[in-house]
Amino acid sequence: MAIEKVLGIETEFGIAGGPDRDPVLASSVLVNAYAQQGRSRINWDFDGETPDLDARGLPGLTSFAPIVETHLANTVLTNGARLYVDHAHPEYSSPECRTPLEATLYDVAGEEVLRRSMLVANEILDSADRITVYKNNSDGKGNSYGTHENYLVDRSIEFAEIVRAMVPHFVSRQILIGAGKVGAETDDARSASPSFQISQRAEFFEEVVGLETTLKRPIVNTRDEPHADAERFRRLHVIIGDANMSQTATFIKLGSTALILAALEDEGLTNFPSPPRHPVHAVRAFALDTSLKTTVACEDGAVRCAWDFQDMFWELCRSYVERRGGEAVAPPDQLEMLLTQWRELLDGLHTNRELVADRIDWVAKLRLIEGYRDRHQLASDDPKLQAIDLQYHDLRPERSLSQRAGLRVLFESIAVREAVHKAPTTTRAFFRGECVARYPDQVIAANWDSLVFDLGTGPLQRVPMADPLKGTEAMTSHLLETSATANALLEALDR
Amino acid sequence: MSEQERIQRQRSARKDTSSSEVAVEGVKGEQLKSDLDDLLDEIDEVLEENAEEFVKNYVQKGGE
Image 1: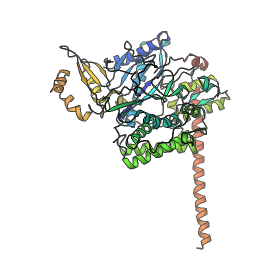
Image 2: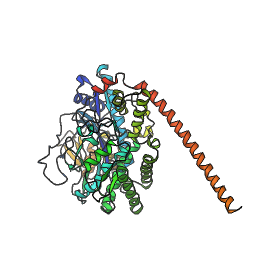
Image 3: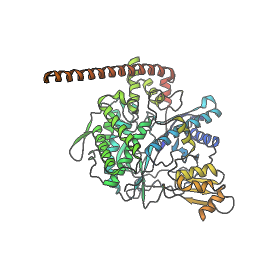
Image 4: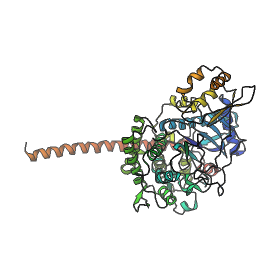
């Protein structure tokens, strides 16, 4: 049986302005502003963080181990998320969610968290130092920052099988979930002089498989840090994705990838499309061609365009759900919504793109860019078009172009506001979020798989949470309701 | 009704449906175009004033 697909998204946001135009300082100001405005002043606990472990089992000798920065602002929110400064960006890591739709909601809640951070920070800053946050992945000048997905995967699946299964998906899914970009930033892409690319990130990928995330970016990342029982679980850390403004795109991104992983766990590689012979070439070439006609040669000798791969994956997932139910990923009504939307996007790309401009970010953005260019008769490299590109991702309601582009919304604003404060109920994020909300003075640190309490007397006490599917509302709400204090909670846990 | 008539009726019925579909598509197309026109007006209102400066100053450090 497929492992229940616990999942979530981490987003590094672009940042502009701030005191001395220092992005690290500006990011810290944002995180601290949010932490102090709310009740959460709880630190992140780095014990157990091993981002340099490699899923292939190789020692990371040829790799630069990612740097863990312990001195920067770092906090845990009552919704179970982590908000912190990563390198020179504010980063929101969503809590562990149980379904793709829930993980989409918590990604949208992350936008709201950053919006509130901006509001609070900008109240105390001089008007010249105001901070702006962008949910995008590149600055147009060769610097990229990530949006990473995480999926719980069965440890018993060979990593090589995951690579073979996922490469065709990761190179082709951009036609549905690419966020679009004006121009090109790397030598290779610039030589094709595109006026527009489907994906923000595609041109930055240089390897098929690897451990790095900041240089020589790989299509399949091998970071092996499950934040859970490593005997049973793997966390697939997916670094090849754009930050989406379209909620439907985020939903399709998470849902399709989770279903494909579940199908792999349950049925193996039998029905999977053969991977492209040159995956790095494929992901870049697909990004460069908004006509979607570009084809690549595959290992089985066939020639396929990105749409063909996605059509095959859709069929694979549809028949998998028909045979197996797919409850490891989501309940039936959500799976139906996922397959219906995925199909509609594919059909729309083939027949009439206007019909999917309300759900596919790159189509929505390209429509703005081309419309504006034609109206004002601008050259394709006019800075105004790049400004439109940037402002598509601006989180300020008064400047955001994606909010004006007519994108479909999946959640009521009240649901988003609640998700800003309340954790998902069916993963360990519930216990983390509730402890942070209920015992803010005693929880002194937290991370994905444990909480650390300081009761004022005696040693610090660590509560492990190795299983992402334990610590749910059903399992812990009675315990929490009957524990008025952290002391009472820990005593009850000891019994 | 002769076979011939029946076929003709079916044909004209089908023709009616398809022409009304075309009409609906036409209305949708016009709606989308006027939506886009409104949207482009709005872009002029909210776009950063000095686009060149704004784009030039947007420089990020790499992340991840």
